[in-house]
Amino acid sequence: MDTILIINGPNLDMLGTRQPEVYGYDTLADVETLCTRTAEDEGVAIDFRQSDSEAEIMGWIKQGRGTTAGLILNPAGFTSTSIAILDALLIYDRPIIEIHISPLFRRDEFRHLSYPSKAASAKIEGFGIRGYEFALRKLAEWARAA
Image (tube, rainbow, N blue to C red; front, side, top):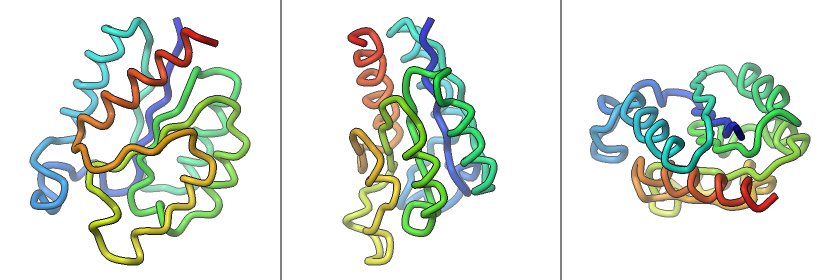
């Protein structure tokens, strides 16, 4: 069974309580439940993770190389700051979908720049946690076609 790696960046463990006017009231546990159900529907497994550590995220991306069918990454606060995560993504050898719960283009100007986008196969933003479902379904489709 193909496995999709799902990595959530800094502060996403605070979903539901941190700026609900921007991110909504769904929690990271709700995201994981949605991803688990979607993965079951699509016949894939997921490896769901969250970290506030740039180094840990980079390590997970590199570990996923050659062992996972795709990567969903919500880089959160590292979106506009981490060239190191971009470099790790450029090493990853499967499709990558970058995801954001809120639309970056409607946020602060400094949030518009996304380093991970330079390595991503696709980007989904502004659909709330449903974006994870969209990304997972697309990666499962690509895995079946490979």
